[in-house]
Image 1 (spheres, one colour):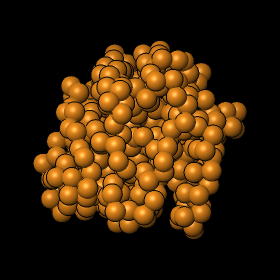
Image 2: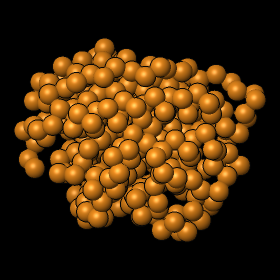
Image 3: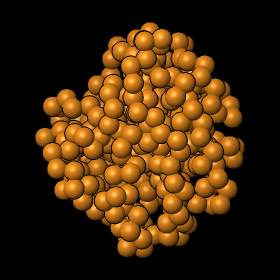
Image 4: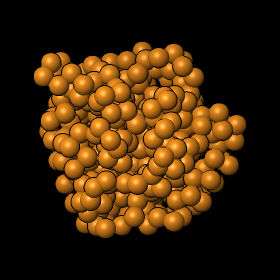
Length: 300
């Protein structure tokens, strides 16, 4: 972990069901993230936030609400990510809803490297406007793969189209794959690590991920914070009372992935400060976890 860590905020809830996630980047900073990362030994470069967007009802695009705003945020984020990589930095993106991953990957692809995306989320995010509920943050992976029914505004953000193939994506800690998504997974031959498999043996699951990613130049990791058990840590945008990983389990998984020699970027999405029972206490735990994940003292 000798490279500088560039931190970029994408304060948008354009693709969400309701507002809140647009506050996350400023909350991370207000509660001491950058100082904690430096205290953990990382050289940190704060590249600031792209222009934000607070969710609003979009009656003109009921199946893909705020699609233009989501695309604008992703496009601006791609520029910041590309600038960070040009400086040979690693990247930490603070979202925002899950559509910001489109910008992260679009920026990563500008150097022509092959990208392995480890998508940590209870949901597959393989919906499209015809099968979703209007919220684009269910549709991020579908647009990375440019599946049938995807919106041009989002699928065309990268240097190539589709931005990724099925062999470039691994769905990690999955626990909610719908019928239409299962068809896409099968057709695209996407690797899946279920929540049950991860919880049964997290180290073995990460070993399988690293073996899978070895065929790519770089590892990029996406985390939808709703992968956390709501009863253990209520802060996600999706407030379903389902089970998930504990913060301790997620921290251990991310620590190993971020320590991989080919890792270059982590995007954290769907943190909704408005859903925290105690914002200061919740972010104290999140910031401590981030410091542990990125610590230069972590065994390699």
